Length: 439
Image (cartoon, rainbow, N blue to C red; front, side, top):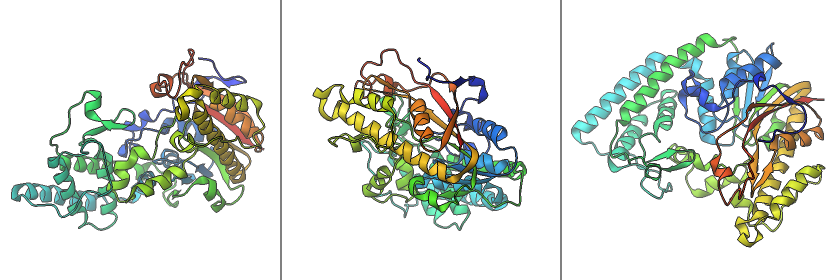
């Protein structure tokens, strides 16, 4: 791997930001998430850069790792998230300290009794699967889908907040008893050598998750440094337009990880959750989310004749890299370099928009920590960390450091794909933390 040019700090400055470390952590473990970073990384960021209570911002909040850790540490937390399922999960976590344990346990007991009686009597479900949700093969087997629909029948009898927590428990477990899995993108289990799920204990999986929530809620109440403080906020809108909702210079620390330049479909890969929870009713709802996603997607940019880099990005190295991608494999049409160069140009244009908003929100002297991974497009290495840092210097930031806590990361879909990468010439994928200071 070729490390980014410039000053690069010791990788021990931050613990591994990989989200996998959250899978056993209270509250964070409620929702499996393919993207994001670890709570340990956020803890390190808060300890180093905001020892006293302040305002912490995550413009791409996901399921709320930054917000939860900031809230626990006694800070005011605010995040932006365009995916309504992720925003729903983040809000539920931030409200965990208010969870009524006895009420939820009683509802879980009633749920198990309802499901057992439904099996014994052969009850037909009243709920129906989302009409517009389509997969190449059945998402659920008939036996599993019947149990899922019965679970929805029970949820219809609940009032808030129990109803919301049941929905979240279903969402957290729903892929597990489906015929699909994340490896890493949503795909059929049979495609990776795993059998389809003919039947499963749906009620048991949902109830186990509910009991976990009860246990974690007690931990969260005890862990919060300031129990009287308001919950963290999740604004369900794009940071590009939404940052004006924050007072200028009101943020003391920004910790985030925008989508990487890897064409990963963050919204498409939560299609089951979006449709089954009612956040999407038709493909047009999903297209709206894709249209406002950071950097768009290659599929949305490939057909355009030529996407120009924003003229304000006056960095020759970025333009040279995009031009190099554009010249690759012209004989492949939209699968060649021009489409990927359009995608890259849209991505770095959005990097500039993000940094403009961040500069407006941060107080002078405040720190922004941006976790970002490099990429390889059509065989051309793209050091996104260094390019982001270069754009930041023209947006009112000083580049303090580029940390590399992960010198290698998984990304065969980028490195090995003939469509995305071609020959990668020995380049590898790494992950960086770009540390910026608002001037």
